[in-house]
Image (cartoon, rainbow, N blue to C red):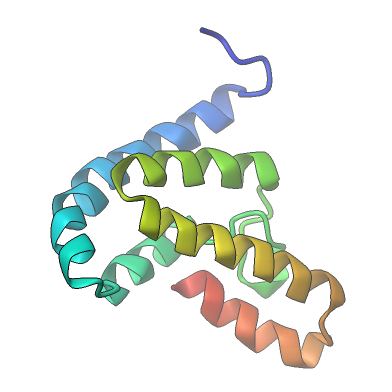
Amino acid sequence: MHNPYIDEDLQAIAEHARRFATQQVAPGFLERDRTRVLDRGLMRAMGELGFIAPELPEAVGGQGMGCLAAGVIHEQIARADLSISYINLLASLNGQILAEHGQPSVARPWLERLTRG
């Protein structure tokens, strides 16, 4: 089924996120779920790929992609591990609040760390 809101660029982003989720996120899901331990390396890898809060402006560490791109990424990561995707979703939501309403000198360092994972 064709989604009129998902153009070729967003399809490519979704495919990239799907591959990452299948190869990197899914294999450790059961262990993370059992131990309830956050894999910081996995979060850093997501940050390196621009998958954490990609809708934030580039000036604060985001990709400037827009919220639809963030949603496409969240969806693909959630297919492999909802908990990891939820952390990513919270980073997006809180990052938007900080970027929009935070004092730049205070918000920027937090946002840069947030988007790096």
